[in-house]
Length: 370
Image (cartoon, rainbow, N blue to C red):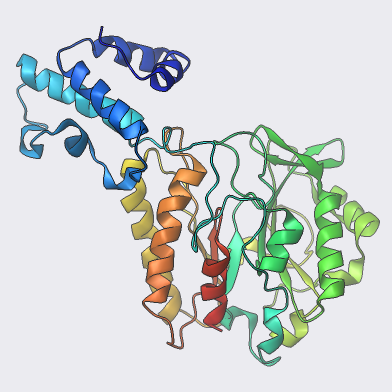
């Protein structure tokens, strides 16, 4: 068996039976070529989006078709090589390195490049909140748990001061205790910490408003209303909330936390399901990024011409076992950035645009449409 790059070999041998089987299959003659390509790639900084299976293997794409004769050793090798590259090179695993990145559209460093804490102050009080374009973060508190669980790198306080106005909060209910989770990953905080940060921010910047989607995660009690109310009284105050299902004007929303209630119980604010939402979050591998982008682009286009009395919410985030949130964000955020910069200066409404690891300049461009 030809030698593999040590990092690649280590990852493969720790990644389960399917990958181990694939590794053993690669003892075919094509394997040496794949190994050399991986060694070359890992020593370069070429972005993974510029690579495809055919480019790495120097294969004519015409040869790789569903109608290929799989009895041919050459074509069997090609098929296995294609599977290998799809799974490893384009899967979003190699692309998740230990180094941090700070770009205009994407930022996984600890602090935003610049802050914009009071941008809503310039919006007329009479404008409906549904006509405002707002930046948001998906899984706002998912700062821990490794590459597959982490969706943000800035603290909540930093996100708010950078201009984020939509939060996506997930709580686990354990006997009335609401801890923050992204799936199985505990985020080292509880719902009270979120409320304290939001209340403190709105006290400092009363011209602003914060929308918070709130849902239960990693527990199935279907009964978080009582604990949520208890936490609000304990860590914030009842008057902090917008107590109506109706969309407020900006003037009515100033200084308020608008709970977008994604759980059963009496009204705490607006219902999350009342928004026009695109959240096609399943991105199995980086080969599926184009499909994800198509969903995002179509919904942004729809928001421009859609009912101005309705809040549109577009999630740019996505993930899968072989497409980590940061790898997807590096690609989708760049496309959102290009999409918006191409329309700068136009009087357009996009609603809420939510991303993982947004860059400060991307947030600013979203804000500038107001």
